[in-house]
Length: 112
Image (cartoon, rainbow, N blue to C red):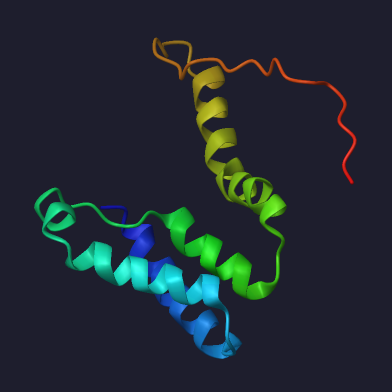
């Protein structure tokens, strides 16, 4: 269980409560969460919705387009990635590093 999920879930509930209105997607997500948390399969395996599930709900309620979600998720992880990289570079005894990722996709894309 990711302890951050409990904190962000509380924030999501607050944001969704203030947003109000009819948003079918948000209502479906909330029902999905309720079903998952009550399902034996999830309970037995101690499975919970992750942080991105809740932050996605918040971003939707705030009006961010879904196309921005990946960028927004990455921004929240940047401090951790940078800290891990700095520790790895500064410690000469570091033997294990995370796998290197090389982007092989298109260098330039045109967005509508």
